[in-house]
Image (tube, rainbow, N blue to C red):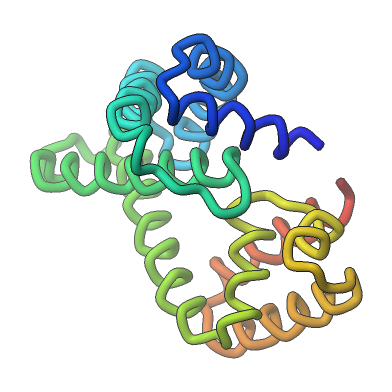
Length: 194
């Protein structure tokens, strides 16, 4: 299993193995940069800076970093958090009022800030789920794990994972606005197709 190989790499990285770190970097660098661009609409240079900084921090803190389920999920979540921080810093230094009315930059920035607000709304709502349901939802949606992988990791049946995801989606449907719900449904459809 690929995630098992990643965990082996992380064990080696914790021991200071620079070659293992290089392998992990090469494996995920490009896809994490692309994710950062898609998630926030930032330019590629900023995305590269965010991802490179993440890997630098990972190396510096390798002895204390603990990853429970998925290295890919951990890195993706870290990039997501760093992108949100980046957008918050951008918001504090750039005002939408300072940009021309017809500026594409203003539209992109507004869209990114709206996405950030939706993401925080989602996180707050997920925290209201029961612990196992929350854990399964996070593994599926934030760590991009397939239902079978989650079942194996948690030592439960795939049917239990499906039931818990159904419960989570039903709960989120009652709590979230339609934009965020649409994102979850699309993500759910993609999950089922893979």
